[in-house]
Amino acid sequence: MRNGAPELGAVDGAAGLRVAVVASSWHTEVMAGLRAGARRALADSRVADVTEVQVPGTFELPVAAARLAGAGFDAIVALGVVIRGGTPHFDYVCTAAAVGLTDVTVRTGVPVGFGVLTCDDQAQALDRAGLPDSREDKGYEATAAALATAVTLAAYAP
Ligand SMILES: Nc1c(NC[C@H](O)[C@H](O)[C@H](O)CO)[nH]c(=O)[nH]c1=O
Ligand SMILES: CC(=O)[C@@H](O)COP(=O)(O)O
Image (cartoon, rainbow, N blue to C red; front, side):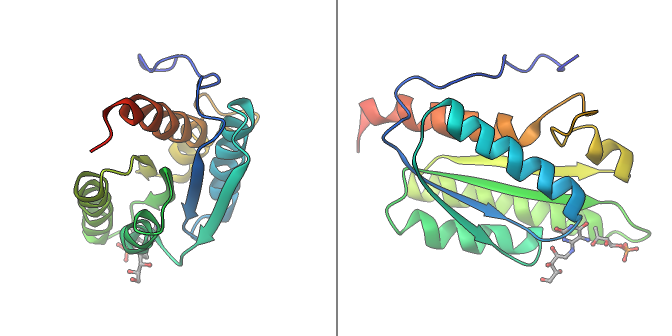
């Protein structure tokens, strides 16, 4: 079950896009799945111009996305994994990432795929990581969303 998400597949018209994938470094097994899912989505859509940037944590995704959005990329994919601990820190990291990435995409007009898992535990994260036993592939989903948005909005250039 994919919770109503659209079917995953190639994005027509995306082949010539210049795309940056920015990934955080926490929770390496889950992150490997998200990054692989993003690469599958890019390959399915025949996107060849791909730049990968790594940051320490999910909190650092917005500043990296902002810098990349100003560097001429057509779409950005932000990948991160935040797993709840014993304090409210989880809420602050997740909110900062969501608000920060939203600000970047709206302010710059560059589509940003939100590939940040915000999970209560490791099992939830693994189930959404696009790994062999995962039910969902959030890395693929976020990438396909960014590509599709970039293609759609190209017709409405500012
Ligand atoms: N707990 C998680 C973090 N925390 C680190 C922050 O993202 C940030 O790097 C730090 O506060 C320094 O600025 N990051 C994740 O990506 N995932 C977590 O579960
Ligand atoms: C989401 C996090 O930052 C997490 O590592 C914090 O764990 P804790 O709340 O136990 O400090």
